[in-house]
Length: 134
Image (cartoon, helix red, strand yellow):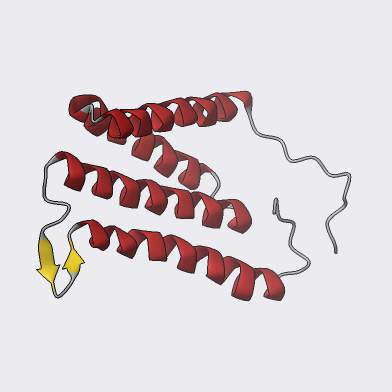
């Protein structure tokens, strides 16, 4: 059965408040990175990543939401790793060949792309009848 275009996707207000707070933490983390405020940036990793994981867990029953929220979680992980490598001064340290520590952030970035590729290229085409938020 195809999803009704008039269907409503409801988010409990407590969840929505947490999602909005998550954006605030994420912005503070990235502002701290931009301004090179090491303590604030590193502390903001904890609530930003924790809330991202909680949001992914809460949406685990809706595959479209879960995949997007997992992609966000690995994005924040990659972003945080990159930020810490810059803050601690080892971002340009060579790991092998021309690959630096900063380049290792590509691992979780690619994981996020693979999660979304799985959803859009494999899962969604095989589950057309399933309701999705995207």
